[in-house]
Length: 94
Image 1 (spheres, rainbow, N blue to C red):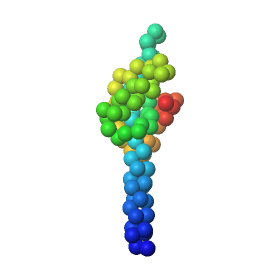
Image 2 (cartoon, one colour):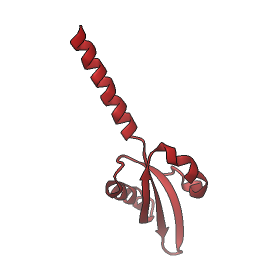
Image 3 (cartoon, rainbow, N blue to C red):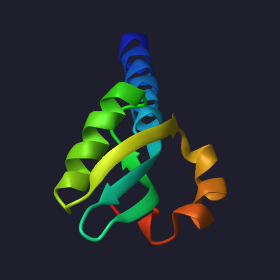
Image 4 (cartoon, rainbow, N blue to C red):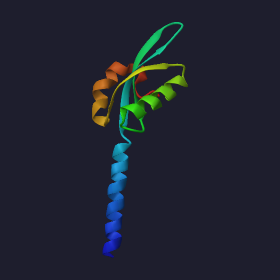
């Protein structure tokens, strides 16, 4: 019985770690041409690595006709509130 409980406890800890890792966000700047439009936004990303987030953000934006200029930072849920007002309509839009 103890080995089963130990296995369940380990599985629960692993799943908690995976859930926490899924809570990654990136704030970015993007543009469109003709006419020139700029925006600042926040989107949820699958990895808390700036390089990987840059690729993901770029792909998702380009599908809507936007060009990524820069990923400013990658952060967890604790940084969402202070960025919400600045992102406006582009807060978690993509």
